[in-house]
Amino acid sequence: MRRTLVAGNWKMNASQAQTESLVAGILDAGELDCDIAVFPPSLYLTQAVALASGSHLSVGGQNCADQISGAFTGEVSAQMLADCGAQMVIIGHSERRTLYGETDGVVLAKTRLALDSGLVAVVCVGETLDERKAGDAENVVATQLALLLKELSDSDWDKVVIAYEPVWAIGTGETATPEQAQQIHAAIRGMLAGRSAAIAERTQILYGGSVKAANAAELFSQPDIDGGLVGGASLDVAEFIGICRA
Image 1 (cartoon, rainbow, N blue to C red):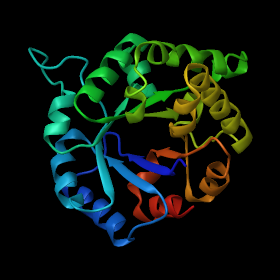
Image 2: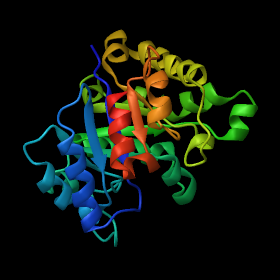
Image 3: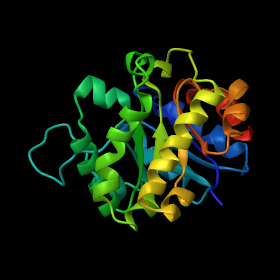
Image 4: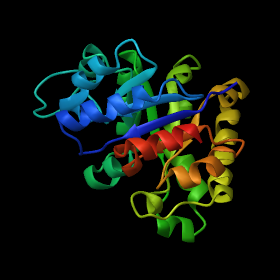
């Protein structure tokens, strides 16, 4: 049985004071009927890990390098994240793909390094508005998943979470309807089933794209939506806990 996962991607936001306040607010809410994770900026990762130590809250990085180590100024490796106590890492977010030109090959390389470092890889996929209007949403997602399905081993998939984030719904206030989201989630699960029925059954598939407490329950009630990758709403403790309670 897949558990619901609610993951808060803080993006390039927060401070030491905000990190303490956000983590404390989540912990004060107690254990809820879902798994919860936060992804602070790298500078605040060790602080969040220390605050969450021994609790039900997982902490992850927002990105990792596609190299193990070396002369890559400004980069943070998967091993470094793990060494600092991170348990997860987001890979291939649409902002990384569009703003920094990350390809499906780079996403695969980062995923391999994350898994080799013992991290859970939260791999993001999703289509632009033009791609959706052209009827290509499922084809775009299939292409983004193709290398992972071909190259990762069955055991690798034990540590992979897929996050479907329609690019047109990220930070725009627009949200895919539950039916639209379910359609793509079901298609993704079908793609996983093409590789292995067991992998399809156990892999969590999250929805991301303007998730709020007001729409979370309806989204999460869909059979193939296993939680959310939450952006802006994760910076408001009350809103984020509302999503978790949904």
